[in-house]
Length: 87
Image (cartoon, rainbow, N blue to C red; front, side, top):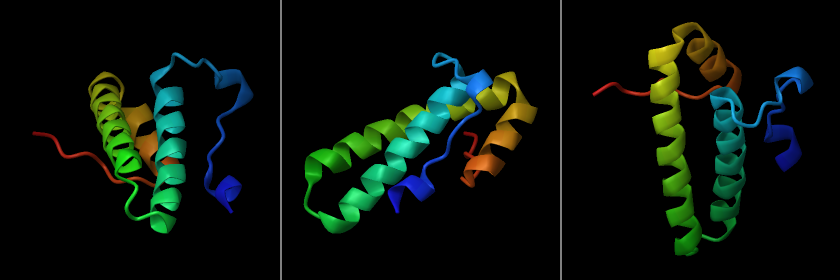
């Protein structure tokens, strides 16, 4: 079930330092942790880790939206996540 939710990136784009790759990787971790927390509601350390990863992904998405709006729109469409609010 978890493998169906995980999103893979093309083999040619497997540059682990790329912002897009990091966002996809964080999204996979977030989905895994969310499934874990549905079973273990009182796992507060995992909740803290989830909040940290969410913050990192939010900062990377903000950076990507400023640098390359087209890639940002494609990525949030592919990952089916909401657009971040701009402060």
